[in-house]
Length: 338
Image (cartoon, rainbow, N blue to C red; front, side, top):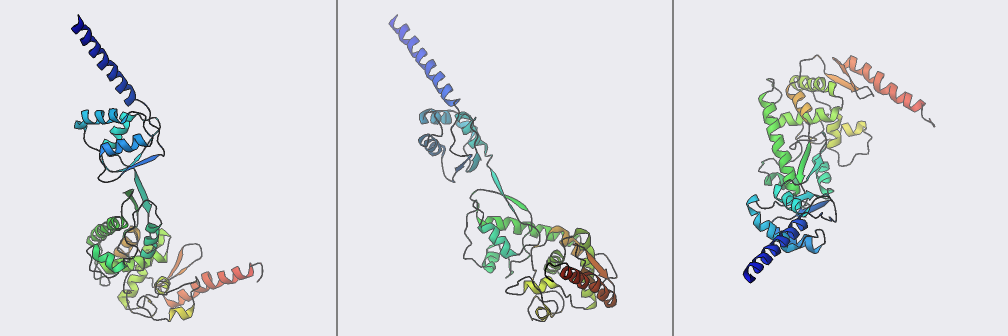
């Protein structure tokens, strides 16, 4: 009788303990924030201890560890940042950490930004680990395995996803690898030309096209203007190349600036400049490699985002008067204090 009573007591106790554990595992968590980060090398027991000590889970740590051990066939946990919800139970939290469904942050690099601007965007991102503060562009390129001494134009503009804590170098490597693939694909699909000798030439021209217009329908014709000039041996005379080569620019491009010698100033040098002047997007790369035939050798900004194209200097001079000089006069006359 005693043994039977003892057995029933043990069974009852185990049943009660089981109910307690199940109830504990189904209790909602109390997250301190919407996100929780598991650092690399952090084991599940350490995570459970931290969650328990910080009061984010009310389930006893021993119960959570026992559940983790019993269910270890479901796999280990993954490092990264996880988004927490207040209605998660402790059991669901462990399953979340085992799922590897980490939060991915995003960083956006618009077309036409310089590499210096890229580095600044990365620098101020609070979710990226900074490792390149004192590293030169040249040394970054060496780390990437490139023989180029300049970084400009070698990174593809896009929106990139990354895990919190990713290094600045890993972000750049992703964009660098992407640009390698893009320029290789576009180079293979290019039109035959005598003015673009290699993929770097294509990126240089694309970067100029990118900076010359933000109006998509004009890109192909702008590329054709530069193609015609290169074929004929004319200087490209692109204002953005002058600006890029200036140590400082206040927004007012003067005639004297066009005469200043630099390896980028296409009013002074022949052909393409030394290197790209920005990181061009796909549309500008494609326009440069697929430039359509045209009769145009000149273009001028119309003042509304579009460009006016001309086949000869006489037409161009008339367009300059029509769209630039006249616009300046009208702006002056409409000024409150002319």
